[in-house]
Length: 180
Image 1 (spheres, rainbow, N blue to C red):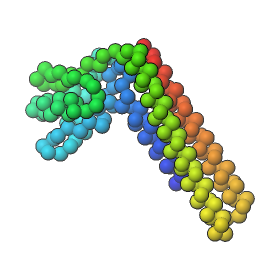
Image 2 (cartoon, rainbow, N blue to C red; image 1 turned 45 degrees about the vertical axis):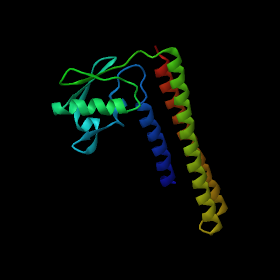
Image 3 (cartoon, one colour; image 1 turned 180 degrees about the horizontal axis):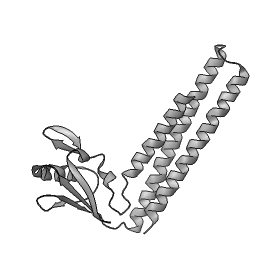
Image 4 (cartoon, rainbow, N blue to C red; image 1 turned 90 degrees about the horizontal axis):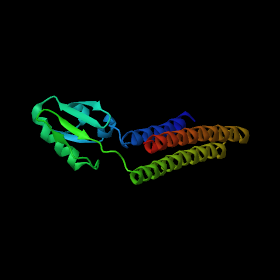
């Protein structure tokens, strides 16, 4: 059961990581987590080549440790799917986050719900795998019918717990997005 519970936790953690990259009209350094910068021929995470600060609610400032990395960072941001145009002052790359329109907020809310549903499907698939494993153990004579029923009950409780956590996460992120 612990193995399947860990898999369900990973599905929840994956959803949280996905949500951290969705921009809500405010500057969030985690939006840059998936962007890789060419650092002497090696794709490196943004945090590995620069210091990222939030000087204002709508602005991110990326200050590379090596000034010649400014152009590489700009290139990586332009190539990403963020939809932001970086500017630089020679020493730092500056990202300005425009306020989200009502239509864009609704679109993001739909995307959030879709990702939440995908996480729930992943959890339910893990439940199915766990139940199948328990049934195989019963057929092999390793456990009794009562033990199988007890295990299936535990699996269902774990599934319900993770689905509830996913629902709370979806509601929290939707509220964050829809708040003007």
